Length: 486
Image 1 (cartoon, rainbow, N blue to C red):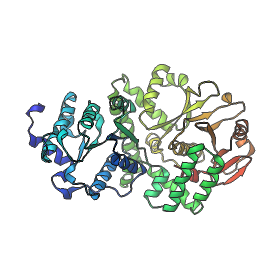
Image 2 (image 1 turned 60 degrees about the vertical axis):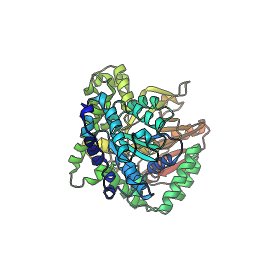
Image 3 (image 1 turned 135 degrees about the vertical axis):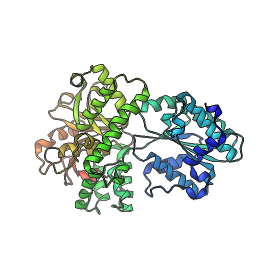
Image 4 (image 1 turned 120 degrees about the vertical axis):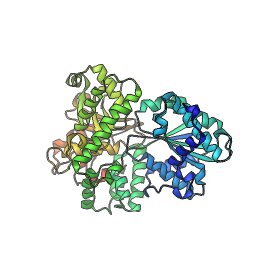
């Protein structure tokens, strides 16, 4: 029983999660490289709005590591280690309690920490303190707990993280409406990977970020072409393309980089265990709406193994042994796991998108490796086009301000052919076609050219292996350069 546990019991939980409270010399040394999301969270922590900050995203992308970096940063700025609490909600002592008692247990831990600091309860602490709550989805009523603590003690800064489907967070965000700011963390982009490895200079990175900001404002293709070309003029193209191969082998999940002793097959199995089985059996099951987890596992495997494939849900449902209605709901939930990029079919009718037909890309190609047990390779004739298309999808999915990310088909435009990606931001449009091949023929870009002309656009983007050129408002940009955009 919770009421029978002593203060010493709760102190052990505090000191095991936050050893620096007992001994200031036990601050955990985090990784040195800080991602862009780190600076966003730090900025929100310094703000006076009094809101909690939620770091959300899929498993193994570095949410816990970012919290450690923030803790170290606070100590370096002069905050007493005793005033910083880190608590993982999946601590064995917490999850061993009945689900309905876990929030009360966390509250008791906070009050015991307050007593260590000289206050009667957590709500009575009269100086700034910082609470880092990890894996919050493990505690049923965490949102009510956080809301009450924020409202009753404005001196407390609360930083949360969790790995689960968005529906869990959506329910919580309704409770915390106006009281939480969410920061999304995804697998490393190629640009972040190069920065982390010190493969690229700070000046180039600065110019690339400026290029991204300019493009996000109005999707101006001529400016993108010129700015990106200027920003990368000092890059060694052959070396960068070598880094792409390294990135494909390493993936965007930091934990994999520390698994050099594992074979490729063992790393693939690790991904399978952590991103198929766990997502199916743990994250999605938390929604309490899944009656057939085996369907979700089959669907996950099917989607990961076939990046960029177009799906008609009416046709796919019988293949997976289910109904179109059930499949549509499954797709909706899987979209919330942050493991997929869903690119919908563009339409010129009143509704901008048709949900029946979609293309699906993994947020990282290591998820495909987990299913196929084969590393992606841009030199493979049969799959290089799909790999290149996936890498483009992963890059443009990180752009801010997009209202539409879609693909075009001949029955939705007045011309024959297809467009791989159609971006829209406010009233600005940008079509992108991926042709990762040595020779580009006129027919390869005919549809792209007609779309640009018909819609009176500033230009269309053609993704190539290595060509920079402009012909009749079609701007050819190498894959390696577009991967540096975000």
